[in-house]
Length: 417
View 1 (cartoon, rainbow, N blue to C red):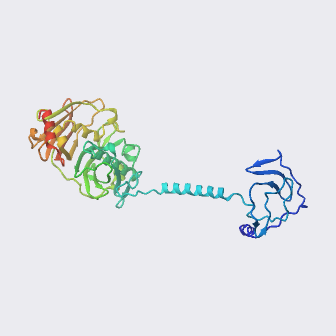
View 2: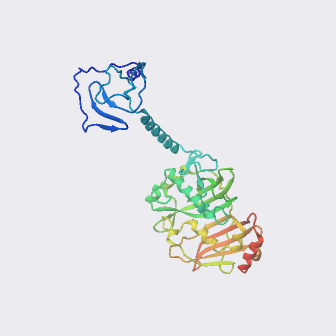
View 3: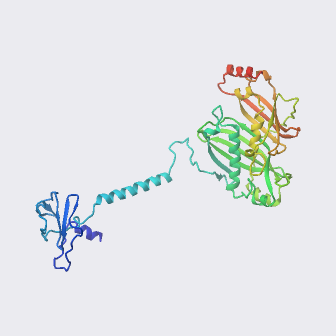
């Protein structure tokens, strides 16, 4: 059919005979004017038209007369050859439609195949991470958002803790071990067991800033007979430098009785294939000092959990405890230093109606010279009003780069230090 159409474009096609049996028809509604073309009637031989356009003098090599002088009612010569070109529609409209379709399809394909043009951009903003290294290590990227930075324009310690917690849960989910609970395996859900953290250690070499992309790697190992250790390493995706190291110990607790539990054999068979034989990334076994109201330098009272502080297991999220502990940190330290390491030992959980106290004692440094001091260490305690311990902690601080000492001395004077 395509060959016939192409041939007809160059060779005349004989016109139909007037005696072919076709009856003449009359356009209803009388004469019509369409863009300068006035139609009178249609015959079997040809269409009788009157036009103001100048017709070409030749068509396919045959000379024709201008149609400008054709009178209404006159028949055009029936010997005028009809070719494929003369019968074609307006191809410009068809080509425009095809072009529009192709441009739209190309745009959609480019959106689906989008790739960043800058190496510091997040490679996949919707990536939930993946398991690498023989299925034992989980890795995930995070972009530091504007609402995750503090007054120093760097990510806060709470932001880093949230990244660690997110990768831990996504690791369990990607490994196919996530049941109906918050990080609990299917067998744990059957036995009404949940994970609770007993110890957390974090060492920060450098805090990422707004717009940075970090890579968080995590893996799990055995910790004694009834515990599990989870470690993390945080890297700068642009430079490859190690930013943060973290290690934690977890045990199981009955969700109803709120008592600690041994690891059942059914649960052990689920999680042990994912354990690695590795040493902790932080190996600090120093005991945390006991603190009370007499030995504390700063005390913050009246802290109460809010509904938003609870997780799906109906206890206060472990990240929230860090904020409460830092509530009693000396203001000069917060202004002149940055947190370089923190160790937390969780003793009890608190309910939503609990009232807490946060205590801090500065060690090895005179309280009056905190603003200009070098490295500073503090002991912390979070407790109920009746004195029962919730969390013990120790923090280490290093001076900020480019600290304005005179401004900090003014702040110290305002606080009576």
